[in-house]
Image 1: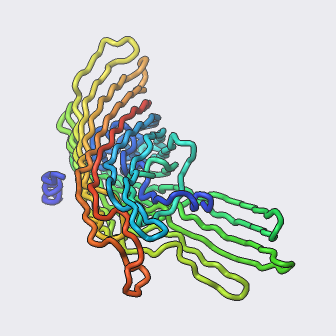
Image 2: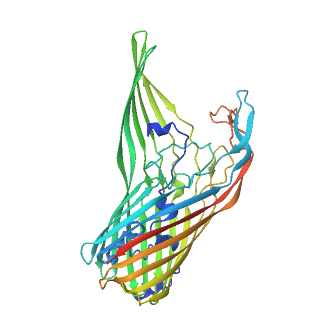
Image 3: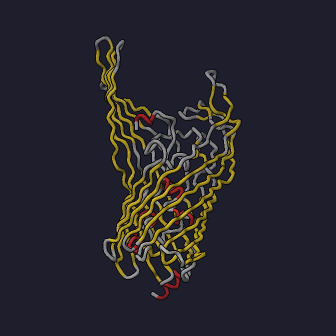
Length: 463
């Protein structure tokens, strides 16, 4: 056991929306920006810390550390600026000549509300709940993906989705914790009934409901020494937000009723299977250091495509919405590092025994799984350097009790490195007849890149 401990000690590291302009949502907002201002400001390196309400997301095995209650609510604010695709092919005329122009890839600025609650049921058992609510006019924007249309696949729809986390953690041996949770999103299921009499007014009856889509995750937290711990977190891939629509239509032609049955389904939300290994070191009361390394299985990425099956009388016709090409994504590693330093402690406040001011910083590198866009697809992405910083103010032992009031602020900067994509074709052969017939949008090429500014705060209470 001592040899193993020395090794760890040395470890340094909807059918209505389907008709809208197509896009895909690749992961929830928590995976892009983080959850909880303290963890975000530390670069998201939090799997081996997980000692407040945000453990419900980062590592549910940490929940038994929270004491009786840890609760926090806050807001995020985002501002995005991406490189425009200028002087490229954007389409063609009826005479099949290319149209040259600029592709608008800007993303509307937005934010959201985040909150969490962790409750200790016993000294060794705790439960946690987390939530993210976008500040847009909808809970989720569900749209299909068109591979040919340029879009920043990992950013455009991520912050626009409601997410719910439910988790539990337990200490099974002294210093050894395990936990499990469910990441819950919602996808629409519905039926459309249409009656279209020729020469008369038609009727449409749409019924739509949202059903939960659940993805499970689990973790382990082991305090190998008083000042050191490790964390391991596994997350199953998420294929959530599917749209499943049944169509039942009747067309009246010359007193002849022709029934049409159809079905549309599509996967419009995807997040890969991933494993995180984390290490935390706290030598004394002032300094805390965290390292995380995450493996993401992007090679199994499934593109979002609407599949349609139409049955006209006795004949069934398969109608593909679009030809799907293999995205060719690669598995990636995501390193994170975070630090926290107790900058100052005051003890003369009348409402609290002590007031702590903590300074935080972090960094993580996002290695893009997207290959150079040489062909007909236009997944826009670049490697990203993400820097974060923040402050934490904690009023300890309020009014002589064990309660603590916390205010955490964070600022985050994403730098998407400029990356050149050169098209190797002007026309593509999608039907396999040997004759190129499809205009390649984005020809002759473009440069991806840009930046994102994010900031926010969390107000919390713990005791």
